Length: 182
Image (tube, rainbow, N blue to C red; front, side, top):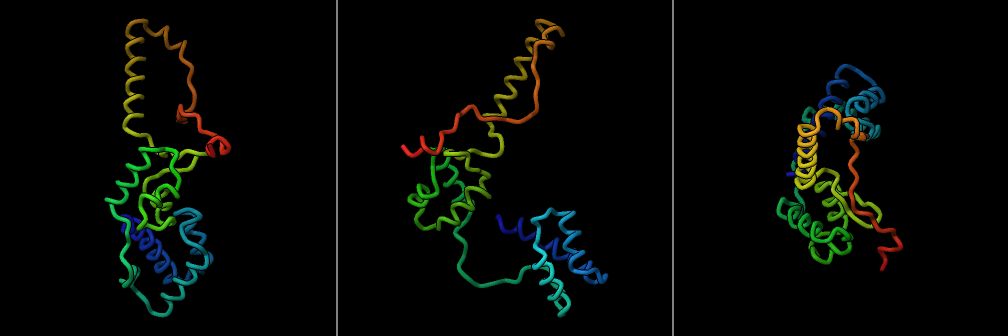
């Protein structure tokens, strides 16, 4: 599920902290090295210091301890249902989703939409960060069209192609915030 991937990265970082701490590297330098390798948001300086203290107190295990508590409502089935609902209406809001999934908190729904499904808010419409299969098929169709023209017209047709970077922009013009209120 989702927590195992995130937990594995956290476990790896805690292993690095434990290793560097055993080599008497200062917590601030450990944090600096972690940020260089894993990025600035991998772990805060305070959390690195906390783990250094815990390891200095004798803890050797870098894995999360088993905790009791309420089980998470997030599962693959919920993610699939939320994704279906989002694809049905791209103008959805978290409030709309909370009406369809009353058992899930708004915070958890937002996390589901943004982190697990990879959507981001663009003005008044949620769009996927990654290309869908439909987008990929369209790219292949365009490439085949160019190949067909190349075989018909030869290399001269290449001088008529305007190229740019590989940024993909949706052909949907997002509504302004004012327009989305209506």
